[in-house]
Length: 495
Image 1 (cartoon, one colour):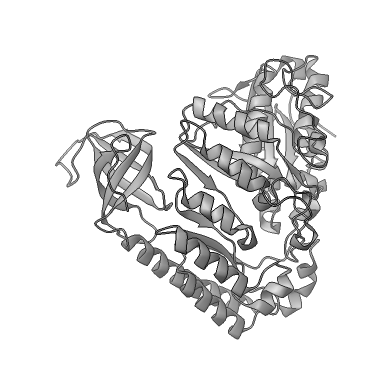
Image 2 (cartoon, one colour; image 1 turned 135 degrees about the vertical axis):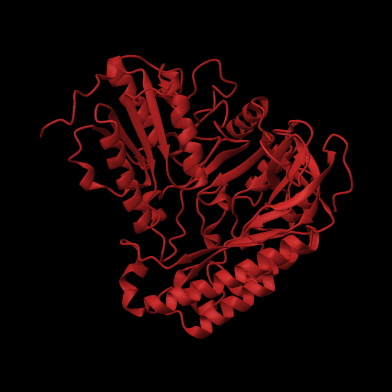
């Protein structure tokens, strides 16, 4: 096999590049990879060509796996002298067609523990150690959680599956994602993830709190709590009928996070409806740090389809959870996922989904036309799928409903003030007639209810919480426009 170029020797490596594909969990893992590489003395490439490219891949759908492999090959072409390391879910699914790449140095899947595999690999090839976790699973001295007992402080095999590598800051983001849970054994019939991340593990609470403090010390004002199955934090299974552990691990963790000084907002990336207990709702309703936004995947509004999907709830369960949350959380922004064209979905099933979506008044719907994923039971049911034309039509109908519901939700706030975390604050430069908007800085961010807001200000308000009166809602897919009415340090009535 002929090499594409004079591959850099590991001992001579200086610069790295990390490419991250996939979900919020993968984004946090990508930050951990950056931190680990820098612990070995490597620098993130800017204008320099990288000596090492690390690609954290996604394989949740066949399309995502294909895009991951394309991304690996694109980096191999762009940087022919660099070594390649492929991590993540696509590596876990065995991308054999990458074996012909001479630059490929390591494939590491989640069942091995991608970070410990990467650290072992780098230590061997670079001839030096990092100041990260040692071989016993403990963090080296100097970290506040150096003496974690891996076997008792968190469940099942965390040494291999959930490596507590700290991250000092979430590079390039105002909102920091914090992964606290990994793995899923729910085995929904359309989902490949339980085959790629089968073992459940939860981060020690000491690690989560320390990582959150690191983010706050770095200036992050908002933290997004994330996991493959967030509601299974502290448990050994996602299957509700099998749960024997106490019912409070996630509740207790959230309570301690909400009490951290300096935290402005704590979001939950996604929960199943059965995770939304009365106790959790009470806790969230009592805190000003929890924005009134929940992501609760529905997937289908038809009980027969939910049953065939292997979901652990039915529509009545979902609606009870929505009603309970909405009764305590004013102006709740409810977002969801819906799959269109699942095998066996009839027009009646789809019509019921539309009615449930209207009933829930979703602020945002993520629409997924069904994609057969090899290795799942639903892959074998393709002959029962609606036609491509029908799926396209149903997705378009749902998109139309989503646009109307999203617009209706945002229009509730016309003339009212919302709290916004400013994520962009750019000084304006005028080279002609003055635009209608005034102010020296064009600012943008997300309201507590997660929709984007744009406004102008006389000062740079980057990374500040402010109150903005909503004046215009141009469209469901455009930022609302408003007027700055206050800084969070001087609160106004926002509800």
